[in-house]
Amino acid sequence: MMKKIIYKLALYSLTIFSLCLTKQVFAETTPKAPRSPPNIVFINVDDLGWGDIEYNDHSKVFNTPNINQLAKKSVHFTNAYAGAANCAPSRAVLMSGQYTPRHGMYTVSSSARGNKVTRKLIPIKNTEILANDVITMAEMFQRNGYKTATFGKWHLGEDPTTQGFELNVAGNLKGHPKSYFSPYNLPFLQNGPEGEYLTDRLTSEAISWMKSVKSQTFFLYLPYFTVHTPLQAVEKVKQKYLTHPNVNNDKHASYAAMVESMDKNVGRLLNAIKQENLTDNTLIVFTSDNGGIRAISSQAPLRAGKGSYYEGGTRVPLLISWPGKIAAKRVDTPVINADFYPSFMKIINAAPIKQTLDGADISPLLFSAYSTAENTLRERALFWHFPIYLQAYNAAGDQSRDPLFRTRPGASMRKGRWKLHHYFEDNQYELYDLTNDLSEQVNLAQYRPEVVNRLARELKHWQQGIHAPIPTQKNPYFDAIKTAKFTKQQLIKKQGK
Image (cartoon, rainbow, N blue to C red; front, side, top):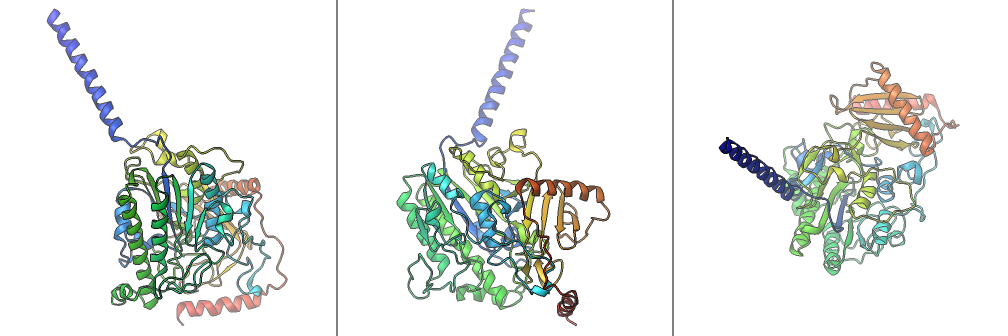
């Protein structure tokens, strides 16, 4: 009897020891939330489409080995979105943490773009400069003791040093450079040696600054001008693509070469972070500001591209890496670039700010290698509001709703598997099941009215809550006959007849 008791006690002790050992191993191998705030390196590539990175590339054209390596060490978000389908409003969402109706930036320059006789409504006036009373992400970092610098495109005002950046290299109100080769003639950037490539120069400036402040916590914002037009590539790199069997034309070759040069410079930056022994305490984000221009680079299987609120215009690549703190994994939860602001605040334990933030804290999706209640988000809707007009880029290649515009006034939302589009001119809805129809080809609105009604109510509730302006005033210059004529002409061109 005594032997049985001793045996059971020994077995019990062994079990407890094993459980403790397992718990210890789990604790040592599972990434943990940070105890001290990290450096933040944020790479935001201009006009880089979801399909223009090698791991998403269905065309088998693009060469991005450095980004591929980063992806292997990152949280890879498969359903990441920009806050708008073109440059300035997307960057305003990112920097403010707010959806477009709060800051009023809906497009670039005028909201009344396209032929005036083809516009049924007078669009809402666009705001072209982010107001100074907006507390930008950079100001938030600065208030929490971070050194801050930006290298490249700003597009939200004349000088980002008025909105939280201590150093500005090349940032201004312009949306793109006149030339990617020196002399650049850009504000806040001295010309380099003749023929120097802008993407190389911005990376060198970023690395130099990082080395100078590495003893302090820093926020390094690297919004490359590339791969925005003009399409200008290093000739030696471009030559590799001119004979590529899947490259369509000279523009496509230039674009692919620009992507490769960008990737090379991402590699330079990552190597510098490693060489300066900053890897363990540096969180790296790689993303883009909106979809790619479809007429230059197809975003298939996504529909359309930059300027459109179909998936090709808003879905973007997104990688977040922090070795030792964040485990590499795939996350399918939809996120949007408004989420970065509140997430960074949580990660660095920032002081509260007096500003409404529309994004969600997605840090729970980062700091666990396993699927638990702690690393999931409650299902929510993502919203886009665009009470403006944006003319067609290429009627034959845009894949837009009509051949005259990439965007007519409307709004869209995603919730779960569903994507809803609402157009203000004709009060029409489109509904797509992204799980089964990623290309948004089959409009289910007439077949699933209960889903349309449910989502439309939620969209309207959101618009009312955020005071989103909806255009209702008729355009006196609208001419239905001329619109039909122009539409027919574009359709004939599109069909090649």
